[in-house]
Image 1: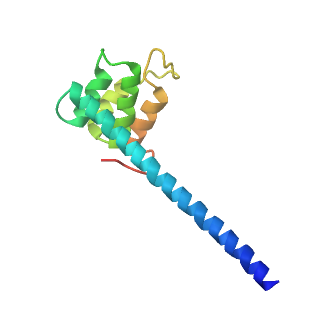
Image 2: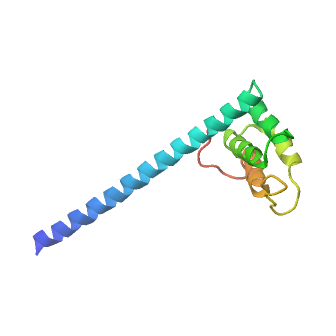
Image 3: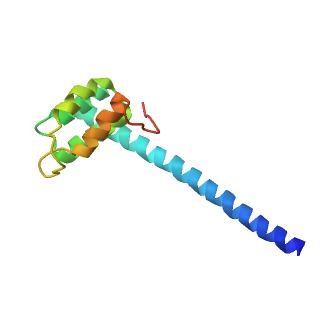
Length: 128
């Protein structure tokens, strides 16, 4: 009876440790993926607008020639970079309306970016 109980406990322990390991690997993988996307969007912006990455991302958001998708990526990146210089531009982009992804940048993304830069929202991982 005791050996059967030990075998069951050993299996439960192995499954538990395996689950923890999978979560840890997933977390590290997501962090790497987010970091690589941030670097990609910063590099794309600085190719179009050479210089500081934050200023380049702000220029993408303000640009008439940038697509809404490019602007949304720049806003998302600014959220994770977390630089206060972006606040005035992000606030200017707010429409006060619900999201209309055909005409305007994503309003939810703007609100989240503004909140995270101002510190009223919490981002678990800042990428600077």
